[in-house]
Structures are given as structure tokens and as C-alpha cells.
Amino acid sequence: MANQLKVYNKLPRFSVSSDGEVYGTKTGKKIKTSIDYRGYKRLSVIVGSRTDGTRKHLNLKVHRMVAESFIHNPNDLPAVNHIDGNKLNNTVENLEWMSVRDNNAHARKIGLVKSYSPTKEHRQKMIDGWWKWFESGGKKQLIKNLAGQKNYLNQ
Image (cartoon, rainbow, N blue to C red; front, side, top):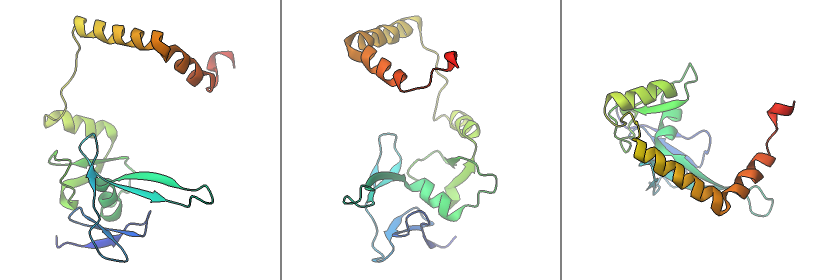
């Protein structure tokens, strides 16, 4: 496929190329992206106005921008899969829409994710760590979070 450029519908000030790059729509210049903590290429952007209180900081995943711009999703599938498993290869040919379940199965199949079964010692370390957090202020945070939720037992 020859490299194509499309305006990103959700934020028209950006255009996305079929080879996985992001450009400014007005300037045509390539926009600098970064790699997030999970290894995905992302674009950090501020939208809205500070004066009217609508200012938001967004982190947009480039592979998702490419898929939303170029790949038809008639079944409204939620996940974008990297066919070759390389999170930095955001070309249209390497992306596909699929269910979260299928995406996870694909990751296991190609060896990106291994099934995890903790040892008895590791489970005990996790429990000990949780209790340490709970006793050192986590209890207050947990109660605060739960207080804001509906109590489904007393409906």
C-alpha cells in the first residue's frame, strides 16, 4: 500500500499516515511521539481551554489512531492487535481489530505473554505486601474509595 495521509476525525488538527506516523494537519510536519510505559507509541496532547475549564491532557496511542483512520470496524471490536507482536510497528498492514479475548490469545500464541501461576512463596509475598500497604494508610484510601461507591448489598 502506498503511504496515505488522513485527517484524524477525533482531533482534526492531526493527520495520520498509513505507515503509522502522525503529522500536523496545518503544517504537514511530523509530530514527535514518545513510548509509554507499556511500549506503545503515543502522542501527548492538551485540548480545551484553561479559561473555561475544559482543558484536558490526552495520551493517544498511535496504533489506535491509525486503526480508527484506516481500518473498517463493522463489528465495533474494541482492541487493536499488532499482527507481528511489535508494538512500534503501526503500519496499516500490521494492525487489525479484534476482541480483547482474541487479542490476549494472540499474545499468548506468539509468546508475548506467558501464562502466570505464582509459587506459594510469591503468593505470600504479594499478601504480605498488600497487608503492609493496608496497614500504612491504604486502609483509609480503600474506605474512602468504597464510600463513594453504591452499597449493592443494601439495595
